[in-house]
Image (tube, rainbow, N blue to C red):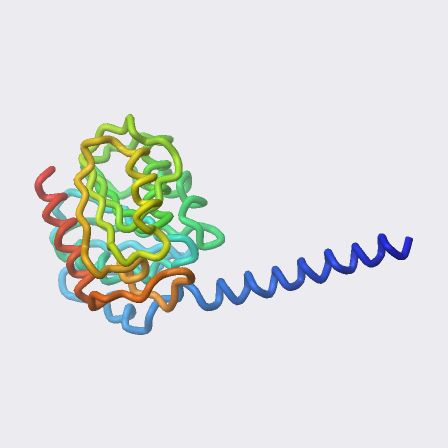
Length: 242
C-alpha cells in the first residue's frame, strides 16, 4: 500500500512539474514583440482584434483577394501584424485566425467557416511553422476557393502530394526546428511542383515578430530583412497567379 502511495505521489509531482514547465513555455514563447503594435494601424487599412484573439485587416482599396495567415504553434497572431499590414496595404483582406491553446491547427474548422463572410473572390494562404500544416488541413478538409499558398519554415507531417495548387516554400538554412533532414522529409509530402526558396542565414523564428523560440538557432540574417524578404517574395509569387 505504501508503495502505491509513493508511486502516486511521484506521478502527482511529475504532473505538477510538467504543468509548471508548460506554463513557463507558454509565457516565454510566442509573445508579440512590442513593436508589432505599430502595425495595427496605418495608411490604407484598418485592423480589428476580435474577441477570440484573431485579427482582421481590411484594406481601404481592396483588390478583391483574401489572405489567411495561419500562425505557428504557441505564437500569438499579433506577431504577424507586420505581414498582415503589408498585404492589407496591397489591397488584400487579411484574416489571422487564433487557434485555441495557441495552436493554429485547432482553428482549422472555425476559420474555414468564416471565409465566406468576407466577400472576396478567392483566397491566398501563408502558413508559418505549424501554420503551414494548418493551412493544408483547412484547404484539404473544406476546399475553399484558393489560388496559391506560401509556407514559411513549415513542417509537413502528412501527405499532401496530391494537392494541385501553386505553392511557394521559403526556408532558412539556419532553422533549428526545421533542419535540412526534416526539411527534406517534408518535401516528400508535397507535390513536385512546389517552388522552393532558401534564404541564407535565416532561422525559424524571424519570419514573424515574437519573443522567443525554443530549440531554434540564432539567425545570421537581420530579422527585419528576413520578414521583408518573405513578404516581398510571397507578394510577387501571389501576384503571378491572380
